[in-house]
Image 1 (cartoon, rainbow, N blue to C red):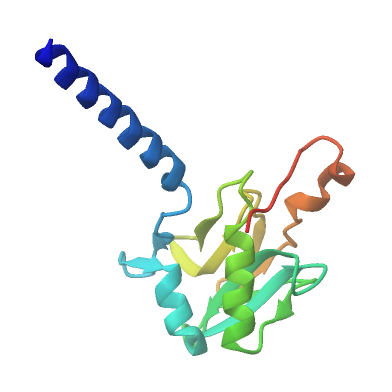
Image 2: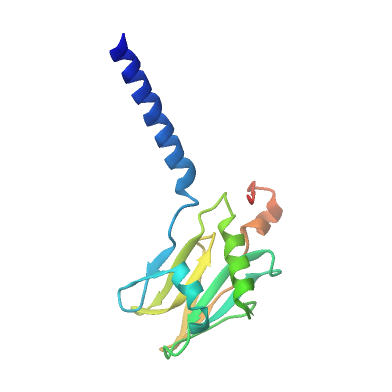
Length: 163
């Protein structure tokens, strides 16, 4: 009898552990992308050294950001594009990152923008639809990234943002 109770308790603990892991998996991730020299670049590292980047956002307003673009300064490479608005201060950047992390129906990811084996910069976005074209060896054009909140007028995708 005691043996059955012990197994039952272990089983319940295992189930609780697995459920807890599934619940926290999406929000506990470390956002990383490959850097220009093969190193890992993290979103936290970009935040801490935000002055080393030209930072822009896509979206209709600062409080409904669709994506963030990080273009490293002094790397000799340039990212251009229409509809990208500069981010001027750290607090605004931090608020925008937190907003993107709240797209719970999607998986926000830090992407390296790579063309011809060169890392031009990084994009943090809840969508994987990132399109770019090479203008010349040192210039990349990044198309606007549409917010998943406004796709198909919101009729096809139920979208929620958690607090």
